[in-house]
Image 1 (tube, helix red, strand yellow):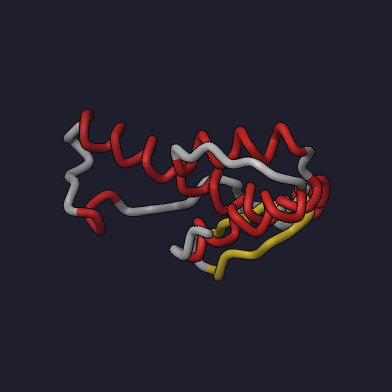
Image 2 (cartoon, rainbow, N blue to C red; image 1 turned 120 degrees about the horizontal axis):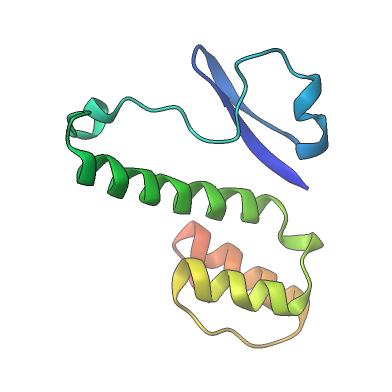
Length: 108
């Protein structure tokens, strides 16, 4: 499975998740952010939690997009439902095209 990885001082990379252990210390699968960049003070527990949930959802969507072709039909339908609140139908190539359109902002 392919995933984005993040480092505090380097650009994000896309790797096979199985290769993560081979990377130097400091690489993680969760985005590294400064809450103040989003207008949220670290002491704002609720704001930090909402931001964390939002970023996790975005990261899951991006990582899923890297792996669309490896998903089964049911997984593709669930991905569209979970990340875009859309019900999609069709064969696998059409489902992938529909999801890619949603990601690009051009639903088919």
